[in-house]
Amino acid sequence: MDRNLKSTVNGQAFSGQARLLKKRNLGKIMFWVVRFLEMDVQIVLSPEKLGNFKDLGNLRLGSLFSFSGEKGMTKSGEHSIFVNSLEVNYECPEGLFEEKSSGPERYRSRSLDLTRNWESFSFFSQISEATSSTRNFLQSKGFREFNTGILQRVFEGGLARPFETLCFANGRVMSLSLTSELKLKRLLASGFRQVYEISQSFRNEGVDKLHSPEFTLLEAYSTAHGYSETLSLVESLVRDVILKVTGDGLVQYKKGGSLVTVDYNEPFTAVSFDEVCQNWLGLDEAPSLERLRKVFPDTFTDGMPNFTWIHKLLSKLVTPGVMNPTFVTDLPSAMFPFTRSVEDNPERSEGAILISQGMNIATIGCDESDPKKIRLVLSEQSKKNGSPINEEFLAVLEMGMPLVSGFGLSMNRLFMTFMGDLPRDIRETILYPVHQ
Image (cartoon, rainbow, N blue to C red):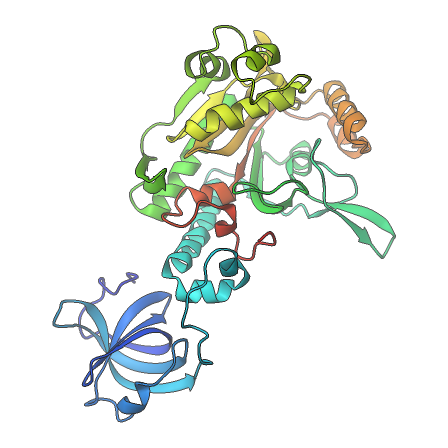
């Protein structure tokens, strides 16, 4: 059914429960906007059909009622339901639906927000559709979905700061999962070929419009794909989801007061990290912290670790200006410690990021499977953050790990690509955000 009744024929019967959102009383006729069957529709009330017409004029906004009627057109040509009978089921308290909340108040009162704000209700409907489309796409490509769990004995999140919780049953301090990567790779070592998980993930670090303590992460890994095939897979997935949600693959949003249109039907651009540095940032030599400090003294400081300055280069200088979907490929190996190096350049990895609408949407990599190399990486991370080495994962690698390629995709940022005029804030994509 069309969300505004346009697809239904005149005379079609409707009945059920609805909630009153707006009303307009013209004396001999009333026009109400109601939430009905996941639509915001207009219904028409007249005294000729309703014996309780006068009493209904005082019904408060937000009230629930049952009704029956038929689809028709008003004199002004608006698709509406003409009511034959109406019974009030619950009268809402006075004032509850009179004013719309804004800002953080919307997140604290999400149920009211979803009821009063059609744009918010419609957006979360699209989020549900996008999540289903993601699952359908991956399963059509032969991926199996797994749930690998939230609690971890050993935190698998690199140098990130975990959330910790105490298990009263055994007295152990456990971490909340940030990534499913190593858990999913255990499945590949066990013989599964293509696996994925859409999971709630947790990072105990700073928050802003693109980062939340709790977020939804899609991770998928395969022993059947290589680097270029995984890039193509991510492109097809994102395009398919956007097309399913929008109907035409076109996304419009406001940026700096201007309306920007992004066409996801077009082939995604691919540019190497070195090309970005040379052609976009004007660096006439291989990027280094020393060189960046000279060119961008306000952004880079002496002593930054390689991972930090490379990440800042991408997040501060490159990503905000990229509107159309673009892969930045062959990223420095320091950014991807678990990813294989490019064959003829050990300083570059078979790792990439997908940027669109000024956001890093996804990370793609062809992964290292040598237990000795992985142990070195985990040992370095252990020295820096004090966490124990993940011997359980290393033991799995000793079994022999097939060549693996995969990606991690922020579902929240994917949702943000089609959020329309809603504020570009990750909290808009989370039903009940804890940071307000």
